[in-house]
Amino acid sequence: MTNLSYGIIGKPLSHSLSPTLHNFWFKKYKISANYSLIEIELNQIEEIIKRIRKKELQGINITIPYKQAVIPFLDIIIDDAKETMSVNTISLNKEEKIVGNNTDVYGFEQGFINKFNNKNLEQKKVLVLGAGGATSSVIYALLKRGIKQIFISNRTIEKAENIKKKFPSITIIRWDDIEAKGEEADIIINTTSLGLKGNSDFKQDFKNVKPNLVYCDIIYNPDETLMIKKFNKKNIQTYNGLEMFVYQGQKSFSLWNAINPELDDELKQNIISELK
Ligand code: ATR
Image (cartoon, rainbow, N blue to C red):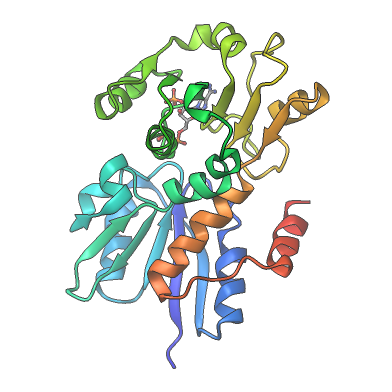
């Protein structure tokens, strides 16, 4: 059987554990394939998409900062990718069309939102920080869950305004006001790259948050960002992005291979040990 090729495009990519995830499953399900890191510049996206058309690549994931930038190069976008205009999974369909899909919404639902079943999530005030590639997936999932009070803030306000065009019921607040808004919030979700391995971190202290705040970082590498460490010290409930990451990967794998791969303990251990 020929060796199939998959990969993830983005920049930087050194933090990505997607190869660990997918190569584990390829081995487990005896699929002769390899998944690699493909760090590219913006102007190389077209060339990568051509490789999918030529079947040199069977599928790719997309991460920071190209989840929107890939869209003009695709033939169609479907399902959650259409709802969010954010694409993280690409493949060639039977009609030989390049299809963009989104598995971040599913990842965020499985990895975070569904942990709060029966918890009156609808009534909560949620502050979403950032307006990057994954933010629209987070907001779409929160709206789907019936949450009405969603506040968004981004250093570059125009990008928050673009997200609001898609989801008009959300409220934009100024980046300078995030600490004040954070004091009222029941849930704070970080979708910026602040805190990502090798990046800078939040300057804000978020000292006076509610004691029953839930803090969620969609970053999984490092497993504890500075914000998570700070909130843990105060006994505030925190979540990192590891489960979101694993579930988005599970759905990408199932879109490519028509197998829903198992999230077994060995895989979790492999990932945790790579984070150390
Ligand atoms: P893109 O912005 O190309 O979609 P991304 O990496 O998905 O890429 O998004 C990065 C997010 O982290 C953005 O919300 C970005 O804010 P800007 O839109 O203002 O760039 C945010 N971010 C990155 N560095 C930041 C910093 N030093 N301070 C505040 N926000 C930052």
